[in-house]
Amino acid sequence: MVKKIVICLLILVIAFSQTACSNAAKEIGEHTGVVIPKPKDGDATLTIMLNPEEYDALPANKFFRDYVDRFENNFGVEVRYESIGSSPGQLIEMEEQDEYIKELSMKLYAKNGPELIFSQFMPLGPIIRQGAAAKLNGKISNLDKVYDGLLDDEIYFVPISIRYYSKIINLEALKTTGMEEPDVDWTSHDHYEIRTKWLNANKIHFTSYEWYMAFESIVDLDKTYDSIHNRISLNTPITKKNIRDIRRYIFDGNYILNQNYKFENYYRMITEDNSKEFQESRDLFSQYEQSGHIESGRYENLLRTIDVYSNNYNYGTIMMPEYSNKEVMLSAGGFAINKNAKNSELAYEFINGLLSNEIQMQIFNDVEDGFYPANKDIEEDIKALEAEKVADERVLQTKEYVLNQIKNEHMKIWNAENLDFYNLKKMIEEDFIKIILADKEYADVELSAKLSELEKKYNIYLNE
Image (tube, rainbow, N blue to C red):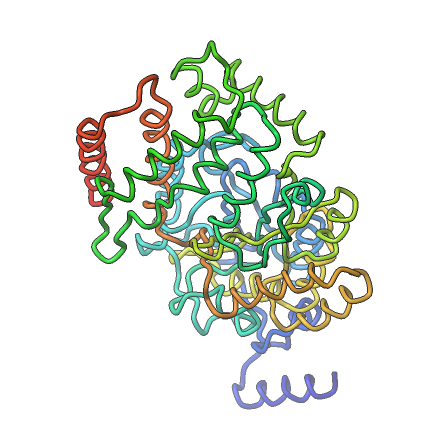
C-alpha cells in the first residue's frame, strides 16, 4: 500500500495536476493507470447496450451486480442498461439479428453515444467491421491478464468470461458397445463409430436429436468453405457421398421410423419447435435419456471441473471436448466499446476492473452462471482449489487439453467473428434436410443440379 501511495505522489509531482490516486481502481483491480476518469460534460453515467435477451440476464449475475454497485459508489457514476430492439427479456430469433444490428448501429454513430456494448448471445462482428467499435490495444492494462488465444491482434472485443460446451457420453451405455473411453482429442469419426455400435444394439425412434447427431457426425460443412476467396463448393463428390451416407444411416435400419411420416413431418419435427412432431420427438428423447441413451442432454462448461466432476459422478457420464477435426467456437460474455462513446475513459476503467484477479475469481465462484474466467493470472489458484475437490484425473486432464487449445489459439470466440458462414451453415443444413429426408432419394443428376443451384445461391449471399 505504501508503494502505491509513493507512486501516486510521484505522478502528481511530475504532472503538476490535481488528479488523485484511484482508490476505486485499487479496490476493484490492479489498474496501473491511477487517475480517476471524469465523466464528460458532467454527465455521470455509463450506459451498457444489450440485446433484449441479455437485458434481464446480465444484471441478474451476482458478481456483476456487486461489481456495478462498487463501481458506481467509487466513481460517482450511474450505470444504465439499454435494451435494443424488442422488449426486454424477449428472445431474438436469428432472422431478427440484422434488425438488431441496424438499430444498435444508429445508436453507436450518434455523437457522444453510449459507452459499452455487451455480447453473450448476439454477434458483434458486424459492428466491428463497420468501424463502430473502438480499438482497445493499449487502453486497458488488465488485457495482459487475458489468455492470448482469446484476443485478436487488433482488439475490439474483450471476453470477461468464457464457456466451452461439452459433449456427454453415458458411461454405462458406452460399456455395452465394448468400446473403451475415447481419448480427449477424439474426432467426429470416433463419435460416429461409438453411436453406430450402440444403435445396432438399441433400436430407438428417429428424433430431431438423432438428426443433429447424425448430421454432425457425417457431414462436415467447414470443408465446403474457402475462407480465402469467401466461396462455398457444394456440388462435389464428397458432399454427394455425405448426403447419400446420412440418408442410408437414417433409413437403412439404425432407427425405428414412424411409418405415417412423410417429408413434411420430418421437416416440422426438426425445424418447428411448436409443431406436434417436434413435441413428440422431444418426449421420446427424454424417455431415452432416462433409460440410458448413449448421449445425455446435459451440457456443462468443460473448464469448470468441479461442476463436471459432480455431474459425471451423479449421472454416470464422461464429458468430452468438441471434435479435434472440426473448428471450435467458444462462447463468451464480454464487451466492446463504442468508438463515439461519451465517457470512453470510464468504459476502459469498467472493463479493466472486470478483468482484475478479484472479480475474475468471483466469476469462478459463481456456480449458477456457469462461466469460467478469461484471466490467466489466476489459473494456478483455480487449479489448487480444483485439486482439493476433483478426484477424477481424467476431468482435470480434459480441462488442461481445452486450456492448451485456447493458449495455442486453436479456438475462436464467436462473438467477434464474421458469422456469415456460421449463419450460412444453418441455412445449408435446413436445405439439406429437404434433400436427405425427401420422400424419394435424389438421382445423381438431380442431386448435382440441386447442389449447383444451392451453391450459386449461397455464394451470392456470401458476397452481397
